[in-house]
Image 1 (cartoon, rainbow, N blue to C red):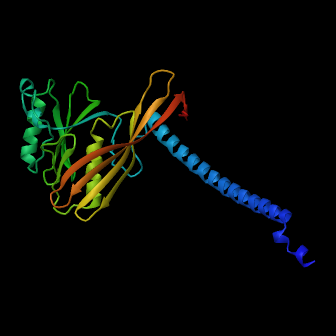
Image 2: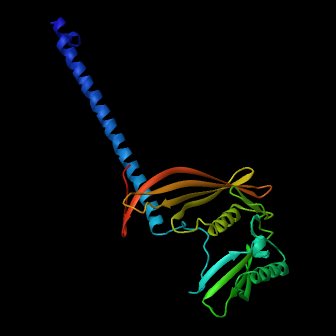
Length: 277
Protein backbone atom coordinates (compact mmCIF):
# COMPACT_ATOMS: atom_id res chain seq x y z
CA UNK A 1 0.00 0.00 0.00
CA UNK A 2 2.77 2.33 0.85
CA UNK A 3 4.23 1.99 -2.64
CA UNK A 4 0.83 2.70 -4.17
CA UNK A 5 0.37 5.83 -2.08
CA UNK A 6 3.53 7.44 -3.52
CA UNK A 7 1.55 8.89 -6.36
CA UNK A 8 4.10 11.54 -7.38
CA UNK A 9 6.44 8.74 -8.52
CA UNK A 10 3.79 6.93 -10.53
CA UNK A 11 4.26 7.44 -14.29
CA UNK A 12 0.59 8.22 -14.88
CA UNK A 13 0.47 10.74 -12.06
CA UNK A 14 3.66 12.40 -13.30
CA UNK A 15 2.15 12.71 -16.74
CA UNK A 16 -0.98 14.27 -15.23
CA UNK A 17 1.14 16.65 -13.19
CA UNK A 18 2.98 17.71 -16.31
CA UNK A 19 -0.30 18.24 -18.14
CA UNK A 20 -1.72 20.17 -15.21
CA UNK A 21 1.37 22.34 -14.87
CA UNK A 22 1.55 22.84 -18.61
CA UNK A 23 -2.12 23.78 -18.65
CA UNK A 24 -1.67 26.29 -15.83
CA UNK A 25 1.35 27.83 -17.52
CA UNK A 26 -0.54 28.06 -20.78
CA UNK A 27 -3.51 29.56 -18.95
CA UNK A 28 -1.32 32.07 -17.15
CA UNK A 29 0.47 32.97 -20.34
CA UNK A 30 -2.86 33.32 -22.08
CA UNK A 31 -4.14 35.57 -19.29
CA UNK A 32 -0.99 37.69 -19.39
CA UNK A 33 -1.12 37.86 -23.14
CA UNK A 34 -4.76 38.83 -23.04
CA UNK A 35 -4.01 41.59 -20.55
CA UNK A 36 -1.21 42.94 -22.72
CA UNK A 37 -3.44 42.85 -25.76
CA UNK A 38 -6.02 44.86 -23.86
CA UNK A 39 -3.43 47.42 -22.78
CA UNK A 40 -2.02 47.60 -26.28
CA UNK A 41 -5.49 48.08 -27.72
CA UNK A 42 -6.12 50.88 -25.24
CA UNK A 43 -2.83 52.51 -26.21
CA UNK A 44 -3.59 52.16 -29.91
CA UNK A 45 -7.08 53.57 -29.39
CA UNK A 46 -5.73 56.52 -27.39
CA UNK A 47 -3.05 57.16 -30.01
CA UNK A 48 -5.62 57.07 -32.81
CA UNK A 49 -7.90 59.45 -30.89
CA UNK A 50 -5.00 61.86 -30.43
CA UNK A 51 -4.13 61.60 -34.11
CA UNK A 52 -7.75 62.31 -35.09
CA UNK A 53 -7.69 65.49 -33.00
CA UNK A 54 -4.55 66.59 -34.86
CA UNK A 55 -6.09 65.74 -38.23
CA UNK A 56 -9.26 67.66 -37.38
CA UNK A 57 -7.28 70.72 -36.29
CA UNK A 58 -5.47 70.82 -39.64
CA UNK A 59 -8.45 70.11 -41.89
CA UNK A 60 -10.63 72.66 -40.09
CA UNK A 61 -7.91 75.28 -39.53
CA UNK A 62 -7.57 75.33 -35.74
CA UNK A 63 -4.04 76.69 -35.68
CA UNK A 64 -3.24 77.25 -32.01
CA UNK A 65 -4.06 75.66 -28.64
CA UNK A 66 -5.86 77.30 -25.73
CA UNK A 67 -3.79 79.98 -24.00
CA UNK A 68 -1.72 80.78 -27.10
CA UNK A 69 -1.05 84.43 -28.03
CA UNK A 70 -3.96 85.91 -29.96
CA UNK A 71 -4.34 89.16 -31.89
CA UNK A 72 -7.48 91.01 -30.87
CA UNK A 73 -9.75 92.16 -33.71
CA UNK A 74 -11.69 95.32 -32.83
CA UNK A 75 -14.03 95.51 -35.85
CA UNK A 76 -15.11 93.80 -39.05
CA UNK A 77 -12.62 95.79 -41.13
CA UNK A 78 -9.87 93.98 -43.00
CA UNK A 79 -6.55 94.34 -41.19
CA UNK A 80 -3.05 93.94 -42.62
CA UNK A 81 -0.32 93.80 -39.98
CA UNK A 82 3.35 94.28 -40.80
CA UNK A 83 6.58 95.06 -38.96
CA UNK A 84 8.84 97.77 -40.33
CA UNK A 85 12.06 96.13 -41.55
CA UNK A 86 15.45 97.54 -42.42
CA UNK A 87 14.84 97.19 -46.16
CA UNK A 88 11.56 99.14 -45.88
CA UNK A 89 13.67 102.29 -45.44
CA UNK A 90 15.53 101.68 -48.71
CA UNK A 91 14.40 102.45 -52.28
CA UNK A 92 13.01 99.36 -54.03
CA UNK A 93 16.03 99.16 -56.33
CA UNK A 94 18.41 98.94 -53.35
CA UNK A 95 16.69 96.13 -51.43
CA UNK A 96 17.93 93.11 -53.35
CA UNK A 97 20.55 91.01 -51.55
CA UNK A 98 20.20 92.82 -48.23
CA UNK A 99 19.77 90.95 -44.92
CA UNK A 100 16.23 91.37 -43.62
CA UNK A 101 15.18 91.93 -40.02
CA UNK A 102 12.57 93.87 -38.07
CA UNK A 103 13.64 97.27 -36.78
CA UNK A 104 13.46 98.00 -33.05
CA UNK A 105 13.49 101.29 -31.17
CA UNK A 106 12.61 102.74 -27.77
CA UNK A 107 12.52 106.28 -29.18
CA UNK A 108 8.97 107.26 -30.16
CA UNK A 109 10.22 110.04 -32.48
CA UNK A 110 12.60 107.68 -34.28
CA UNK A 111 9.86 105.08 -34.62
CA UNK A 112 7.51 107.71 -36.09
CA UNK A 113 10.14 108.77 -38.65
CA UNK A 114 10.73 105.14 -39.67
CA UNK A 115 7.00 104.58 -40.04
CA UNK A 116 6.62 107.62 -42.28
CA UNK A 117 9.69 106.81 -44.38
CA UNK A 118 8.47 103.25 -44.94
CA UNK A 119 5.02 104.56 -45.90
CA UNK A 120 6.46 107.04 -48.40
CA UNK A 121 8.50 104.32 -50.09
CA UNK A 122 5.48 102.05 -50.58
CA UNK A 123 3.86 101.90 -54.02
CA UNK A 124 0.72 103.44 -52.50
CA UNK A 125 0.96 105.90 -49.60
CA UNK A 126 -1.32 105.26 -46.61
CA UNK A 127 -2.27 108.11 -44.28
CA UNK A 128 -1.47 107.91 -40.58
CA UNK A 129 -4.68 107.93 -38.51
CA UNK A 130 -3.64 106.62 -35.09
CA UNK A 131 -0.63 105.74 -32.91
CA UNK A 132 -0.81 103.24 -30.06
CA UNK A 133 1.62 101.03 -28.17
CA UNK A 134 1.92 97.88 -26.07
CA UNK A 135 4.75 96.42 -24.04
CA UNK A 136 6.05 94.77 -27.24
CA UNK A 137 5.67 97.41 -29.95
CA UNK A 138 4.50 100.81 -31.17
CA UNK A 139 1.73 100.64 -33.73
CA UNK A 140 1.04 103.14 -36.49
CA UNK A 141 -2.42 102.70 -38.00
CA UNK A 142 -2.69 103.78 -41.62
CA UNK A 143 -5.40 103.75 -44.27
CA UNK A 144 -6.28 104.92 -47.75
CA UNK A 145 -9.36 107.22 -47.63
CA UNK A 146 -10.55 105.65 -50.89
CA UNK A 147 -10.78 102.21 -49.22
CA UNK A 148 -11.40 102.86 -45.50
CA UNK A 149 -12.40 99.24 -44.84
CA UNK A 150 -8.75 98.21 -45.28
CA UNK A 151 -6.68 99.03 -42.19
CA UNK A 152 -2.88 98.78 -42.24
CA UNK A 153 -1.22 98.20 -38.87
CA UNK A 154 2.44 99.14 -39.09
CA UNK A 155 4.50 98.04 -36.07
CA UNK A 156 7.96 98.76 -34.72
CA UNK A 157 9.19 96.45 -31.97
CA UNK A 158 10.58 97.91 -28.76
CA UNK A 159 14.34 97.61 -28.35
CA UNK A 160 14.07 97.08 -24.59
CA UNK A 161 12.18 93.84 -25.32
CA UNK A 162 13.68 92.35 -28.47
CA UNK A 163 16.56 92.66 -30.94
CA UNK A 164 16.02 90.96 -34.31
CA UNK A 165 19.25 91.95 -36.04
CA UNK A 166 20.97 88.96 -37.65
CA UNK A 167 18.06 86.51 -37.56
CA UNK A 168 18.26 83.38 -39.73
CA UNK A 169 16.83 79.84 -39.79
CA UNK A 170 18.20 78.94 -36.35
CA UNK A 171 19.04 82.25 -34.64
CA UNK A 172 15.83 84.14 -33.84
CA UNK A 173 17.17 87.25 -32.18
CA UNK A 174 17.74 88.32 -28.60
CA UNK A 175 15.33 89.05 -25.77
CA UNK A 176 16.62 92.24 -24.15
CA UNK A 177 14.35 92.35 -21.10
CA UNK A 178 16.38 92.88 -17.94
CA UNK A 179 14.45 90.39 -15.82
CA UNK A 180 12.78 87.99 -18.22
CA UNK A 181 10.43 85.31 -16.94
CA UNK A 182 9.06 82.11 -18.45
CA UNK A 183 5.83 84.00 -19.18
CA UNK A 184 7.80 86.67 -21.08
CA UNK A 185 9.56 84.02 -23.15
CA UNK A 186 6.29 82.26 -23.99
CA UNK A 187 4.63 85.53 -25.03
CA UNK A 188 7.53 86.64 -27.25
CA UNK A 189 8.04 83.25 -28.94
CA UNK A 190 4.32 82.89 -29.65
CA UNK A 191 4.11 86.48 -30.89
CA UNK A 192 6.98 85.89 -33.32
CA UNK A 193 5.38 82.64 -34.55
CA UNK A 194 2.13 84.50 -35.24
CA UNK A 195 3.89 86.54 -37.93
CA UNK A 196 5.64 83.67 -39.71
CA UNK A 197 4.61 81.74 -42.80
CA UNK A 198 3.66 78.86 -40.49
CA UNK A 199 0.55 80.79 -39.42
CA UNK A 200 -1.43 79.67 -42.47
CA UNK A 201 -3.88 76.96 -43.42
CA UNK A 202 -2.25 73.55 -43.26
CA UNK A 203 -0.12 74.20 -40.18
CA UNK A 204 -0.98 74.10 -36.49
CA UNK A 205 0.63 74.44 -33.08
CA UNK A 206 -0.55 71.50 -30.98
CA UNK A 207 1.10 72.56 -27.72
CA UNK A 208 3.28 75.44 -26.55
CA UNK A 209 5.11 75.19 -23.21
CA UNK A 210 7.98 77.04 -21.53
CA UNK A 211 10.13 75.44 -18.84
CA UNK A 212 13.04 76.81 -16.82
CA UNK A 213 16.50 75.21 -16.66
CA UNK A 214 19.59 76.31 -14.75
CA UNK A 215 20.91 78.79 -17.29
CA UNK A 216 18.19 78.96 -19.93
CA UNK A 217 14.51 78.90 -20.73
CA UNK A 218 13.29 76.08 -22.98
CA UNK A 219 10.18 76.69 -25.04
CA UNK A 220 8.81 73.66 -26.90
CA UNK A 221 6.13 73.81 -29.58
CA UNK A 222 4.70 70.64 -31.03
CA UNK A 223 3.68 71.57 -34.56
CA UNK A 224 1.91 69.78 -37.38
CA UNK A 225 2.09 70.35 -41.12
CA UNK A 226 -0.45 69.09 -43.66
CA UNK A 227 0.80 67.94 -47.06
CA UNK A 228 -2.19 67.61 -49.38
CA UNK A 229 -2.07 64.82 -51.97
CA UNK A 230 -4.60 66.50 -54.34
CA UNK A 231 -5.70 63.05 -55.49
CA UNK A 232 -7.44 59.98 -54.10
CA UNK A 233 -4.32 59.18 -52.09
CA UNK A 234 -4.04 59.91 -48.39
CA UNK A 235 -2.62 63.21 -47.17
CA UNK A 236 0.50 63.12 -45.01
CA UNK A 237 0.76 65.06 -41.76
CA UNK A 238 4.21 65.70 -40.31
CA UNK A 239 4.53 66.15 -36.55
CA UNK A 240 7.51 68.24 -35.43
CA UNK A 241 9.02 69.19 -32.10
CA UNK A 242 10.31 72.76 -32.37
CA UNK A 243 12.54 73.88 -29.51
CA UNK A 244 13.53 77.45 -28.67
CA UNK A 245 16.37 77.81 -26.16
CA UNK A 246 16.76 81.25 -24.60
CA UNK A 247 19.95 81.91 -22.63
CA UNK A 248 19.22 83.72 -19.36
CA UNK A 249 22.48 85.68 -19.43
CA UNK A 250 22.42 86.89 -23.05
CA UNK A 251 18.80 86.48 -24.13
CA UNK A 252 19.90 84.80 -27.38
CA UNK A 253 17.10 82.74 -28.98
CA UNK A 254 18.11 79.60 -30.86
CA UNK A 255 15.66 77.32 -32.63
CA UNK A 256 15.85 73.65 -33.61
CA UNK A 257 13.30 71.43 -35.35
CA UNK A 258 12.98 67.63 -35.29
CA UNK A 259 10.51 65.47 -37.23
CA UNK A 260 8.84 63.08 -34.76
CA UNK A 261 6.44 61.06 -36.91
CA UNK A 262 4.05 61.12 -39.87
CA UNK A 263 0.27 60.53 -39.89
CA UNK A 264 -1.69 59.53 -42.99
CA UNK A 265 -5.28 60.75 -43.28
CA UNK A 266 -8.04 61.47 -45.76
CA UNK A 267 -10.88 63.98 -45.80
CA UNK A 268 -14.21 63.58 -47.56
CA UNK A 269 -16.42 66.63 -47.20
CA UNK A 270 -16.93 67.30 -43.49
CA UNK A 271 -15.66 63.87 -42.43
CA UNK A 272 -12.12 62.58 -42.14
CA UNK A 273 -10.33 59.40 -41.18
CA UNK A 274 -6.92 57.93 -40.56
CA UNK A 275 -5.38 55.83 -43.30
CA UNK A 276 -3.97 52.44 -42.41
CA UNK A 277 -0.29 51.99 -43.17
